Length: 410
Image (tube, rainbow, N blue to C red; front, side, top):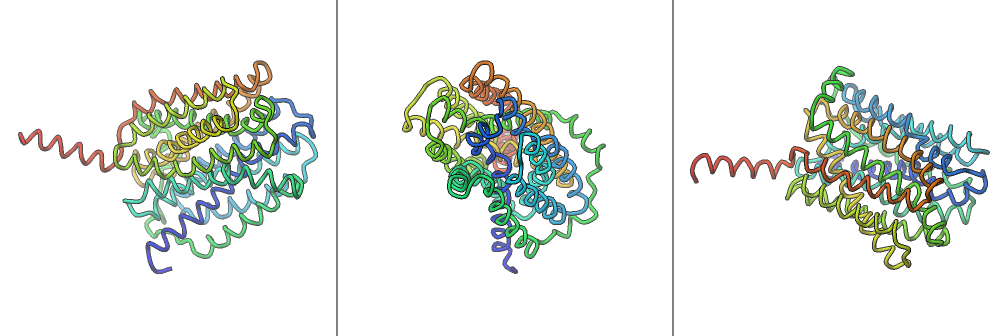
C-alpha cells in the first residue's frame, strides 16, 4: 500500500478489529455468566474474580509491553502477544470448574494487556496529526462495538445456537485471521528502532508528574466503570430487572453500539473545545444515568435510553482520558511507557480489586447497590478531569494567540 492515507486507514481499522476481539475476551465472559453461574455453582465473589482474572497479568504485560515497544518496535510485540491470547481464549470451551476458568482467564491477560499500550502507541504513530485523537478513539471503539455492542448479541446467540463451549473457539479463528493481515501489511516506522524509553527509571520519573498522577486516577475510575458495569450488567438485568437473557443481550448491545459512536464523536469534539470540558461533561452525564438505572426499576424503553446515555458518554470519555491526553502529556519517546504505566495502576485497582469488591457488595447488599457504587465512581471523575492540564493542540494554540494579542495591546 503506497498511498499513505489508505495505509493509515487500513492499519487503524485492522488494529480496531483486533482490539474488538480483546473486548470479547475481556468483557464477553460476562454475557455467559447467566449460563456459567448455575453450571459451576458460582458465588458473586467468584464472578468478581473471573472478571478480574485477567487483570494481574494484564497490568504487568501492558506496562512491560509498552516499555519494550518503545525500544524495539510495535509490530513484533503486538502480534505475538495477541496471537497467544487468541489461542488461549479458545481453551475457555474446555474448562470444567471455577479454578480452570480462572487460570485460562489469567493467561489471556498476558497477551491482551499488550494490546492496550502497544496498540494505542501504534495508532498514534501511524496517524496523521489532525486525525490522531479521532483514530485513537476509533481504535478503542473496536473494544466497545465488539465487546459490548455486537458482542453482547454475538456471544449470547452463539451460546444459544452452538453451545457456550464453542463461543471462544469461533472468536479465536476470527482473531488469527486479523493478525495474519497485520503481519502481512503493518510496517514499523524507521524512527522507532533503537529508541530507548529509559525503563523503570523513566517510569518512576513519570510518576513524579502531577498530570500523570491525575491520569492514573482517571484510569482507575474509568476502568472501575468499564469492568464493574459491563461485568455485572447482564446479571443485574436478568436477576434484578428480570429480563430474559436474549433481551438483556439486546439491551446491553445498545450501550455498546452508541458507545462506539461516542468514542470517536467525543474525541473529535475535544479537538475543538478542549479535553477537560468534554471529560467533565461526559462523566457527569454517564454518572447520572447509571445512578438512575440502579435506583429505578424501569421498562425496556426508558432503560434502553439510560443505557444509551451511559454508553455514549462513558465509552466516549475513555479514549480522551486514557490515550490522547496521556500521549500529549509526555515526550514521543515515552508514549508507550506512559500509556502502559497509567493503565497498569488503572487495571490493578479498577479491574482487579474493584470487580471483586463489587462482588462482595452484590452478595451482601444486592446487585443494584453494586451498580450504584459504579455510578458514584464515575461521578468522582469530575474533579480529577477538571484538574487536568489542557493538552488539546488547537485549544492551546488559541490560548497562546489570546495571550500574545493581550501582551501587544491588541
